[in-house]
Image (cartoon, rainbow over all chains, first blue to last red; front, side, top):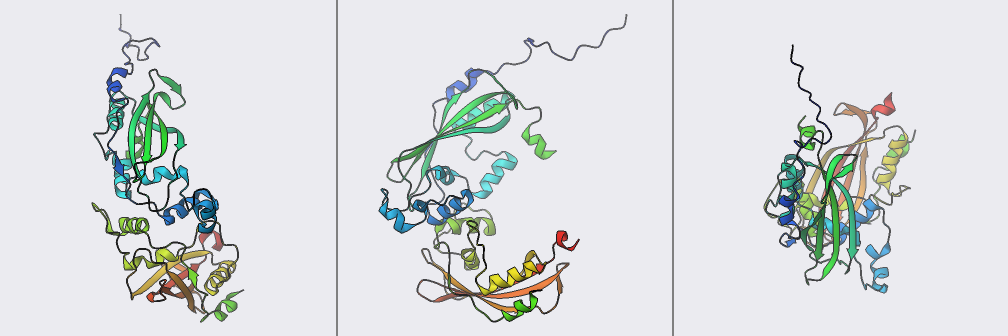
Length: 203
Length: 160
């Protein structure tokens, strides 16, 4: 009797399909990157560019006279803009995006992402940002930031992108006087893609 | 056709326009990154002289509805006559004084010439407009003069 070809479709409870090993990412949780300084100081021109793109006509960000009379006593930057000063220079950002070369491979969050990739959760999509504003940012300030790996889902989420885990990154922004200006939780979904982003780019 | 009106604006100069931003380290870094490639760190203590035109760039928003200056009117007239495409053809720069951090530049624009008939450049037919920019700093010193030639051409969508 001829042998039937082996069934390719796995049953839903098949144990040969690997489950995400949380213990591999657990050591990185709560760990922080070193403090890094922004490439630019806060300038009025960067604030103007942001306000134009966001179509934010708040005079507190542009009108010196108006801002002087406000409780801040001068022009401030839009608080939502804090992350701008943590962005990499253009060439480094392109290298990271196109060639997936991480600028800071030793950071805990980078190591966590690498671990997720190794376990097949190689897709990434930004899902949420949550910001808390503590102190105003003013022109002339130097913004530094630190990235902490805040949380990783302990169970799989079933999403439209596929099966994935949420990874919460916590940014802390401070100025040159060591005052915290704002905090931000940046939530990304690391998921098992049907085709990786890398392959989609390289064809 | 408003093209004869455009000819009448030749030789007219705009009022003094204040650059939207003062010369800042961040803008210099952005310019150097794009023009000079990659480096470990950037010299942002003085602006590259070729960057002067960057400070003459208009705000993205809110959009200017009505053209008030002669050079804006010329471009608007050509837009209305069906030459909606804009292409920079040549930019001659003369750098006279260095532009330093914190400088507040102002500029005037003069319409030097508008071609009298359709010309062809870069495989496109249209009208050439030559503008003369004069940049001054907050002390009233002329830092740079620049001649900017623009081709206003019929876009594919307009010619079909």
